[in-house]
Image 1 (cartoon, rainbow, N blue to C red):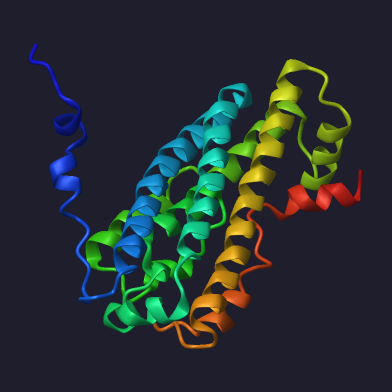
Image 2 (image 1 turned 90 degrees about the horizontal axis):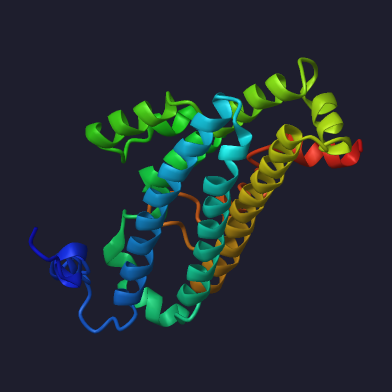
Length: 248
């Protein structure tokens, strides 16, 4: 078997050709491109981990879901750090290359929509977004039909705690997670809250960063910019896991 060197295995030569700034003299455009490409690579990892989580929860094996879910949470925290790097751009430097990006926008990330669907909180209206091409829409539609993490969690909850009202069963789980199966399911519940909190924190941090960089300008993808982002920061993937805190 022939040896494989680092650059060949990771296709470094190909990878380094994928950052193509559009604006001459815009010093921060390379940073902007690299951060967003890194996001898409990490989204790819998250999607594979969320698929594993969903499969294992639907099989009522929460103890096998903890590790991939924990990795998903760690990736989410890493992505929050990427925003800190983007915030090193000054508004005037960002505006040097922002207009030529139009209508490109992070709002158009089909992988981010897939993360929402596999998490169990996707919005079917996103399947009709005009900026997705036929291939992207078909792929995302397929993802939307896959087993998701939240319905998997409910399947495990029913198998381990029993049937009944979701909030009541969650209360039972939080009050008593002394058996190995309940302990694993409780750990999954807390990691789901971490995953949810990461996304909520990312939305809030992204809102602040957008305000810092562009103020109240419209978004390049046709959104209302900051006004739209302000409508998203109260969203939660798993409201029941937050509500149970109020009834314990």
